[in-house]
Image 1 (cartoon, rainbow, N blue to C red):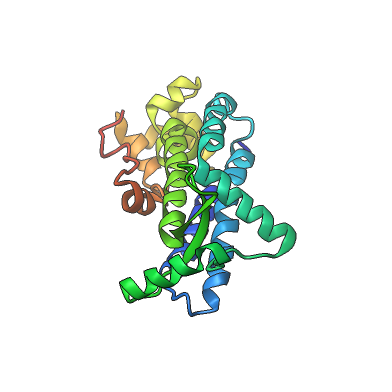
Image 2: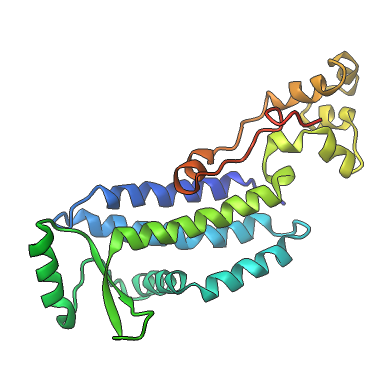
Length: 237
């Protein structure tokens, strides 16, 4: 892996940033269209950045093949890909654009609920009609959650590679045929410093203390109720 996984983390945070702006905006705010466009663009880029970052990592291509199959089978993922493509190639923004066949439904919904909400036209998965009018924020959040799950699964599957705290564990270095001294040198210290380290896992723990924890655990927790554990929390040796 030649790129830092932090690029993937940043893109995920970027998508969430614009989703939050969209969620907190009113359909009467013209800026909400910018938030939606930016969210779709950032969200669509997440898997592209993931592939570029993980290129060359053993096992990633076969793992990601199953992810691609899931995305192709997901109607919402296909829809947002189309929305992004239309936006990029034509400049059109589909947020709150209500076609004639849904105008009556839209007006009745606003009158009944007494509030304005962002809407978007989705394909009707039940086949009763060509399209349905849906809550744009709800659809965006559902799509975003599916992307967060992909990143979570990738993080969990390849944590010894993408997470610096899991990377600097005895388990990982033993698996790749390296020693604690090699880890010390990788961090830019003289090799003989390894002899001054605490015994057992204390030395590894001292190296991990210099590394940041998972930077997107707050997103995993909020949208999935999951988190990436820290090796020291699980008494990893």
